[in-house]
Image (cartoon, rainbow, N blue to C red; front, side, top):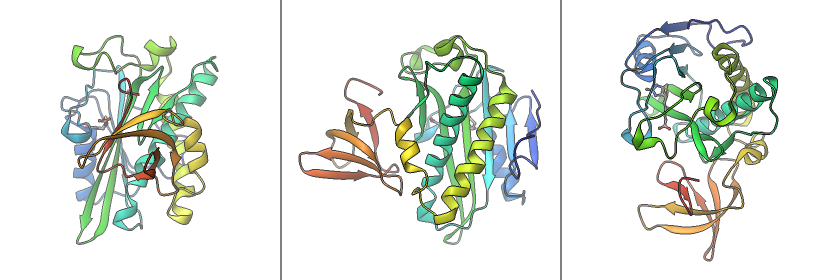
Length: 265
Ligand code: BTN
């Protein structure tokens, strides 16, 4: 489904749509290398080789989901780029919340599983993959890829215990173009707030309101040794604050993942 972004100022003015492609992140990186503009959007109805985090694949059923990638060329120190993934997560969570309200439900909420999975009823309905390309030591471009399970009615067995779709969890058929517009409208707002100070000081409280792990027990899968604690919130640079017997730990997203004590959340 081709669409136009009517409610954004700078995102999607350069726009590429594919009925089918291997991966919108891969395409976005190719366009970026060729010199496409800041805010270029690449979207597809079907991905034959969707990419997930940690080298996993992303199941991209034909037409059931939203698969899109944004090219950014931010003036930002490399070490600050990981915060963009939290900016994307809050944008998607807020967009889904508004879409659900506009479609008649304010009883079911989207949540963020730190740092950037969006979950409804403890099942993952959206994943975000942020990729960075450097020129020497500076950021050349960033690609933010967003996959939203919208109308899927079933999932491959390997992921069926943790993955779901907005339709399955809410019973609502949200229109693709409505949600896509909402996501990028929200992203423009939060991205500006982030770029004002190059940190999350204007955003982290709202992010914490979406944080499913907040005040819950979590297990931190640190390669240097797993430990448990209670997630208390995030810092203004996006680390998860985990209270442990040894004190408050600041967990960075690159190195570790976090699980609920009884499973995924
Ligand atoms: C995750 O593992 O949670 C991240 C999944 C990201 C999937 C999206 S779908 C659009 C974009 N293109 C890709 O190949 N991956 C991202």
